[in-house]
Image 1 (cartoon, rainbow, N blue to C red):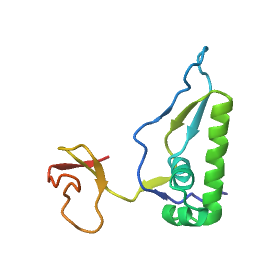
Image 2 (cartoon, one colour):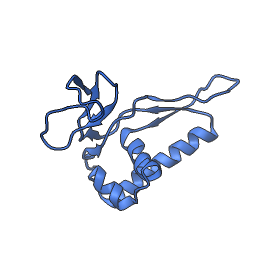
Image 3 (spheres, rainbow, N blue to C red):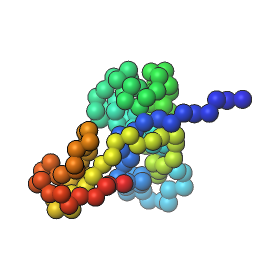
Image 4 (cartoon, helix red, strand yellow):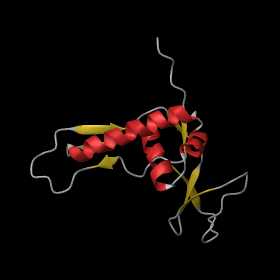
Length: 132
């Protein structure tokens, strides 16, 4: 019997739910599902340029587990590109560790470290909401 997967930490869920191929002449039948932790692994390594050890620490998993998540994400993205598939980002075993806020005045998203009163770092407004 397999062990239950423990929750992986992610900084923030993406602001979108997936991608569709552009310029396809026929309807797309195939769909590739990318989990939230797979998305986060690609973001940490390929966008934020972290090595696997640092990225694993951020996601609170071991380095070998992180490498398996990252490899799975790369294989799924390659399949979607080659087979002209829709990419859906959903599900997985992830929790969001950081609370993000949005300023109602200037519309930026930001996080707050510590127990400070939430104020917009750009305009100083206190008119903010939790951004989910």
